[in-house]
Length: 58
Image (cartoon, rainbow, N blue to C red; front, side):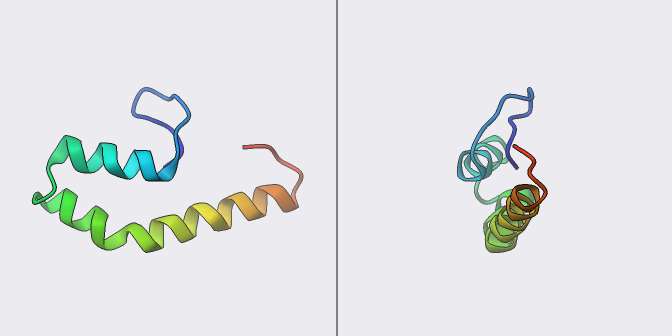
């Protein structure tokens, strides 16, 4: 959720918008992404916290 499809860095917010724009807000993917957004954001936060605790830069 922190890189674009081409591998460039991005924010989770921008990545979620990109996915929704690509598939359409009312597609199965678009609906799922909106529904899963809180869990996706929480997952990114957990990974960032773990990386910080381990002294890793993301």
